[in-house]
Image (cartoon, rainbow, N blue to C red; front, side, top):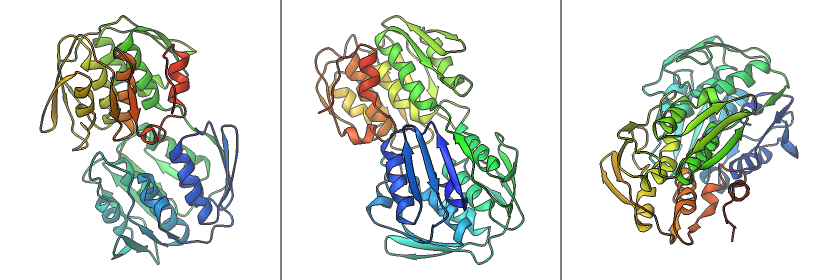
Length: 388
């Protein structure tokens, strides 16, 4: 959606989910002049009348991904003023890396209380090496670079499937990008962009959530159109825990008996490693698994926010720095728990499905940021679950 802002034309996004982050981004784009309409799962973005260059207020601070409009606005207008984005409670996620990288392309930054202005009279290509393979910084550089003068070489770029999808959309719109899927991207800037139609790929993290749900509760599920090639680490862990996995033309079949095995040691990592977004759902499953499991978190310093809520449900979890040791208990017990972020919220829903008795998960708005209708999906799997 942010990339569509670069196109002085109409972009059509198929398979676009109805999640709250999409709604927030739609509001942001509308405020700066985009005309957006939706028909079922298709989103049409007309960016021909965009004229605004200031974004502030709740719509920016409540959603972390609003920072993606930084690179897009610089690419389209060469200037943008915006409030510092918020929406993230799992770690600091400073945007210094974004700003430092863009400064190499001729962008100057001036700060004021709670906001900043970025300007580039002549956005130009550069050789940029990211100190960390940040997804957000990679995206922002990409969005600016396709409009910059000359060639940009981005080294230590993130390789997540979401980056590949963004590159595919930009290339389909007329951008010239080489090295897609690797850690070194070469972007030939300044090529004219045109409207296109693009299908948003299936979400590997949503698929992984339901994959581990089957492990936590036992059963046989089919994940239709699951992006199997992007889920290798999740599938490896699921098989290690005892799941039977089969891939067919329909998708990913998961068969699991109740009481899966533990995971002696797991470390989150950037793609293609085990995703940090799957750490909380996995922890929920391991809480009710016989044996001792250890998870080391290497991406975000506050990703263990779910642990305290699981302990309320009877889990035995010990935290030490960036490590969590989970000693499985025979059963979890339903109670009132509080979602503190998106993936932790999904993990608590899994724990509630596993627990004896009734579980109430508060702050469902976190979950709705990334799951279109998690209650519908679990009801289809036989869970007695309602919203309130």
